[in-house]
Image (cartoon, rainbow, N blue to C red; front, side):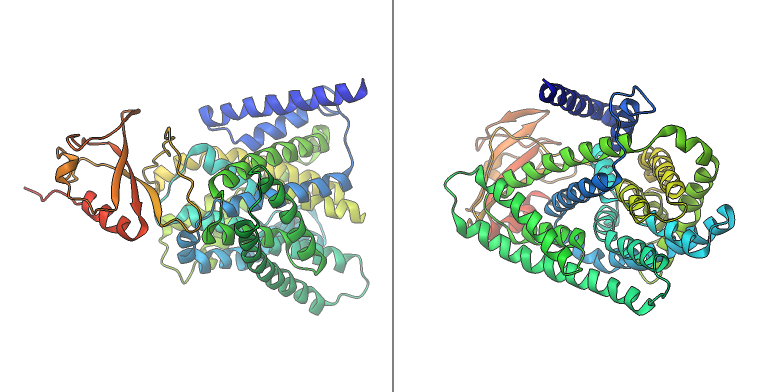
Length: 488
C-alpha cells in the first residue's frame, strides 16, 4: 500500500511537470522554474505533502542527474560548429568564472559583512552558468543566433562547472583547515581540468569503438549499455580527482563527432533522459528549500542577483572575450544568457554538509539568486536578442514520415534544403535541375504536406527538399540548388 502511494505521487508529479512544460513553450516561462515551483508548492511550506531536508542525498542525486544532462548536451553538440568558438568558450569557463566569483564575493563582503573568504565562496557557488538551464531555455524558445553565439553559450555552460566546483571545494577546504595551502588549491584546478578533458576524449573514442563493434542483438540494449558507460566514466574520472562533469560532456561531444551506430535513436533516448533528470532534479531542489526561510534574505538576495546580472557577468564576459572578434552586441547577448540553475543550488549544499558558519544563509541566498536569474534573464532572452539584433531565423526541424539511420560505413546522407524565393531553381522542373547522378530528391515538404516528387514536379518557394545523396556529391548538389537569381 505504501509503495502504491509512492508510485502514485511520483507518477502525478512527473505527469504534471511534463504538462507544465507546455506553459514554458506557450508563455516563455523557463521550464526549470515551473519544476522548482511545483516542488516548493508540495513541500513543507506549501501543501505539506512531502517533507525533505536531506542535503547529502540531494547532493548525490543532483550529481547523477547533472552527469546525464551534460552527456545529453554533449551528444547534441556538433564539433565542427563549436571548434571555432573553443578558445572564447574556455576563456569564459575559466577566467570568466573566476572574475564573477571575485566581483560577487567583494560585493557580498560589503553587503553581508562576511569575511572575504566567505564572500568569495558565495561568489564561487553562483559563478558558473548552468548547462541544464541554458539547454532548457534555448530549446524551449527555439533560439537561433548570429555569430555562432548559441554554440559559444552551450559550450561555455557545459565546461565551466569544473572551475566553479574547484573554487567551491578549494575554499571550503581552506576554511576548514588552519593551514591554507594555496599550492594544493591551484593543483586541484589543474588536475580537475586536465584529467576531465583527457578522460572525456579517451573514453569518448573507446565508447564509440565499443558501440560500433559490439553488435548487440537487440537495439534496446544500446541505451542500457550507454547508461552504464556514462556512470563508469564519471565515477572513474572523479576517483582520480578529475572533473567527472567535464568528462561526460566531452564524451558526448567526441561520440557525436565520430559517428556511431543507432546515433539518432540514442540521441533521442538521452534527450528524454536529460529531460527526466531535469524534472527530478528541480522537483527535488524545490522540495529541499523552505520558502519561509527565503523571506529574511530576499532583499540582499535581489541585490546580489542584480550585481551578478548587471555587473559581474558582463564584466567577466567582456574581459574574457577581449581579444576575440565578437562585437559589443554579441558580448551583451552572451552576458544576458548567464543563466543560473541547479549547479549553484547543488554546490550550495557543500557548505551545509561541511557544517560551515553561515551555510544556511548562503544556501537561501543562492536559491533566491537562481530564481531571480531565471525569472529575469530566462524570460527575456528572445526580447533582448531582437533588441540587440543578434537573433537569426530559426527553422524548426521537419519530422518526415521516413527516417534514414545510416551505418558508420554508409557513404550516403540525408539533407534538407529550404528553398528561398531568390533561388534560381524556383519555377523549374526537377528534371531540368541537372543534379549529380548520386543525388536524389526523395520527398518535398510543401506547406506541411509531403509530396513524392516526379521529374515534372515544379519547385516552389519555401519548399523543403529532402535529399538523399552520396557524401562526396552533397556539396555540389547544395551549390546547384542554392544558386541565387541574378538581379535584374
